[in-house]
Image 1 (cartoon, rainbow, N blue to C red):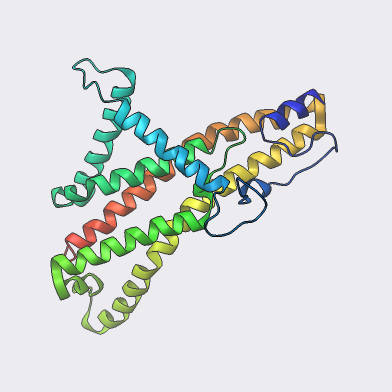
Image 2: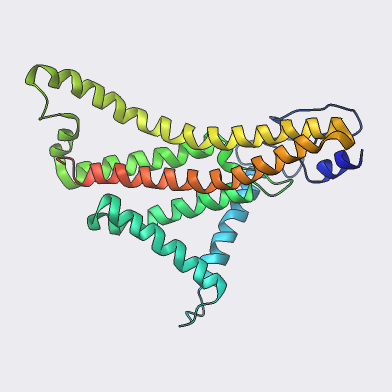
Length: 259
């Protein structure tokens, strides 16, 4: 009972008095902050945690570096490390021509990373577990890359879909495949992020349900919770990295479609 109570307080268990109670998908329900009515303009738990994510980014990147000390503080060191990491990623993957887009890519990385990490706090809400959020992020990348491709290269951007090194008879077929693949990008881009975050959090809830039901014999499920939680921290960082590096790859295609 004590173990179940602790899990309940941590937000990993829905009910510690009713035995086995596992509702892994309840944590993803959008609920209004005020009242019971949910409209498109209603402040919800999702908008709250997105706002907290923005505040965390400002605290780290603005407040943490305002001193600009020669010998950096811990906050400034972390901010500079992340800044340098993302800038090098953009330059290495997409080339120096992509550096004007660095602020946008950096903002994407920071929002996804901190949204993922904040979602691991007990009783929090993981905004990036919702396809509605990740789909908007992926659609914005898709539209940006497509517009950049046509603005910079004109009709030459269409050469991205024409595999000139293939035999002539196969080129029209490959062009159709490349075109379909291009329009599937935002779908895979968004589902990959939301799916990984949702799956990990659901598994945590399932293990917590078993731990709460087993009471004093919950040693194995608790070890599972600790292991999965550690894995989720790693997944949170990796998924932010994967989303960002794919954005850089797509941007490279837009800037250099002939390569």
